[in-house]
Length: 126
Image (cartoon, rainbow, N blue to C red; front, side, top):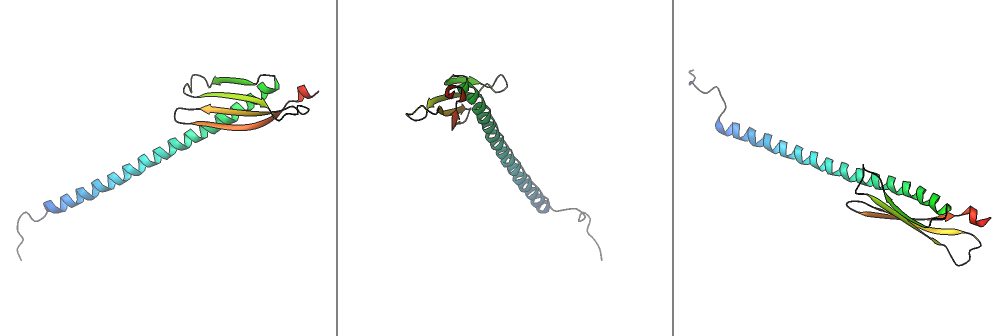
């Protein structure tokens, strides 16, 4: 049996199929990677907004107890695109019990979140 010279390599079609499979695999991997990055950024934004809301709720409670019923501010140089505000109004007509409805709002670059709470002011009760 004789062998022809030049039959030891791959054909052009075999090489093209291998390159097409490799390219498709890389495309799928890149799309998966960018989808994971998008999910990470969304989760980071959600966590940051929740942390800011909790922080502002604490600050608003202290300010209402000090007698300041409105306020606003930002979160410093690290987060210049985030701002907050709060507003407190007396709850109900009867002020025998000093309750305040407090609305806290955090504004970010993509959305805005609000939360409400009730603050009991001990100092005006005495």
